[in-house]
Length: 293
Ligand code: NAP
Image (cartoon, rainbow, N blue to C red; front, side, top):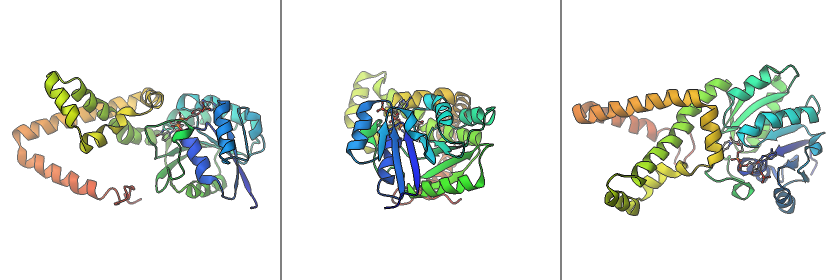
């Protein structure tokens, strides 16, 4: 097959590995770079890349670079990538936060051909063995253009995102961070609060019984309590102002709910019904977000 574009993926864990697995056998030539030689050995052995190395020099001539390292390594990796590739090479990333990265890129003295990216898909697992081909199927993929971004490059990157099975959504980087505080970081914190409530319940007998009885409702609500700790730590500390703001709203919401339940059940159940109906329309039966654009 004629390979018309070369794509490099740096950081071959859950996200980077899933990108390679999905783009394998497409028109793109794939190059993989990661920290550990074992991971590189694996992706070569599994036929996921044409070339793989721990040395970033191998990406010198590629057309598009996906930086999929942990959040706290993203800016440093971006600088290395920018100093290695041709000026026209499109650089994107997968980091779950966009504001501080775009602030860095937009205030840089040297041009960085960067478009921020964030796939709205993931699991609580990490590393190359946790990656899988269908991870991005039907997911939204946020793109946050920088001051250096051209229309042509957005169109080209959107094409690759669609090839990954995802739907691109253009957004402002800081608005993205406020939104993910609500829909990613609050669920993570809530799952920790709920899990901790049961685990440390003051009446030990009741706590133990609750743990023994915990079925699918508790399982679904606390899945995120086991999120990769490095990822969770990076997300929560880098997005702290927006997380704290959202947390205050959440506590106020919980307190209002408590007041309604004890003082005004009619309004409580009206709100309940409205939320239940709205929630039923947010996802398709397959679990994909179908909120209209
Ligand atoms: P991950 O599974 O921990 O994978 C990251 C991999 O990067 C590591 O396994 C490591 O691979 C490699 N690595 C670490 N430091 C590196 C360096 N300096 N240079 C090159 N490779 C390096 O993490 P992930 O979940 O894929 O997350 C990657 C990015 O995607 C993060 O920015 C995260 O915010 C974002 N994201 C994650 C999710 C999610 O649900 N997990 C969802 C959306 C976006 P080896 O040591 O094996 O070489």
